[in-house]
Image (cartoon, rainbow, N blue to C red; front, side, top):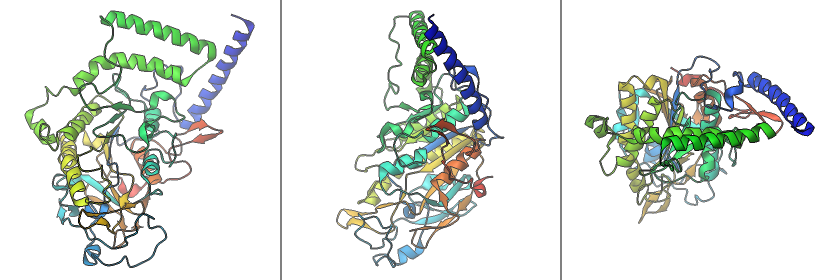
Length: 471
C-alpha cells in the first residue's frame, strides 16, 4: 500500500464514521456498518406503527372524482349550463366551460352510507373498510409533473419516490425480494421509470419493475449450467467490487450492484414461486377475476401484491391497466366508455384484494392507497358525437385508503357543490405523504437524508399528518 492510498482510505474511513453518526442522529435510525452490505435490513420505526406494508394502487391519467366517489346533485341539476363563475385556474385547454352532470348513478353503500358510483359495484361493497378523502388537491395540471409530485412530493424529475423513502427508512423483511416493487399491468405513466427511482438516496432503494408476462424481471434467469458455478461467479464479482470500495471508499452504485447480484440470485427461485398460483384455491382465483377477460390481468397483479405482502415486501405499486380503446383514465372524450372499461378491469380485483387481506388477518397491517395524479373537471370537453370527456383538474379530487390504521367507513372533507375546489378539511399531496409515513411509524420531519448541503425529506418543508383519518 502506498502512502497516498493509506491517507486516502483513512480519510474516507473517518469521514464515513462521521457521516454515519450524523445520519443516525438526523434520521432517528440506527446506522451500522452492515447497512451497505444489506440496505434492506429491517430498521426500527420512530414510533409504534399501524401498517407494515403499503400497496399503492396508482390510477394513472386522472380519475374523475365527480363520476366515482364525489356525487354532485347541483352539478347534475345544472347540466348543460355555463360554469357560474370565472376562475384563472381553469386549465387553458378547457375552452368549453359548460357543466356536465355525471352520467352515472350514485347509491349509498355499506353501514356507513358512503355514496359510491355505479362504476364500482364491487368496491362499493367495501365502503365500510375505506376512508374516502374527497378534499385532495395538488399543484400540477399536466401528467408528468403531476405524477412526479404524487410519487416524490416534487413536480420535477430526479427526486426519490415515496416507495424509496419508505424502503430507506424501514428496510424490508423479505430477504428474497426487493423492498420496493412496481407491478406493470399496462404502461409506464408519463415521467417514466424515474417515478420509481431512488434519486439521491442509495440506489438500492429504487423500485424494481415487474413486467407483464412469464419473465417479469429482466436479467435474473440463470445463465450458468449449475447453481454452484453461478454462486462462484457471484462471489468472484463481489470480491472485485469490494476491492473497488476498499480503494475508493463507499460508492452507492457499486454497493447497490453487489446487493443486487445477491438479490437476483435469491430471486431466481423466489419469483417463479411467487407467480405460481397452483396453491391458490379456485375460490380465491374467482374472487380476483383470474381467468376472466376483463379482470384477469389486474386480478393477477392484485393477487401477486397480496403474496408479496406475505413475503415481507415493504412497498408495492400497481400501475393502472391499459385497456384497448381507453387511454388510461385520461378521458378528454368518451369518458363513459373509457372510465367504464377501466372500472370493469380494476373494480373486482381491488375489492377482492381488500376482502382477501381482511379474511387472512392482514388488512390491519397493510395500507392500501388508491388514486391518480389529479381529478377531472366538472365541465365537459370534446364533442357530443364521440362522447363528452373532462379535462385535467388538481384543485379538488378524491383518493381513498383502507386498512393499515385508517378509519373504515369514513368520508373526509368535501369539494364545493360543483366539485371544482376542495373546500373542507383540505388534504394536499404533502399531507397525504406525511400521513402514510406516520401510519408506518415514521415521522416525516425526521426521515431525512443529507444532500446538496441540507437535510432532504419526502415532504420537504411542508405536510401535516391528517389525524382525522387515523383509526
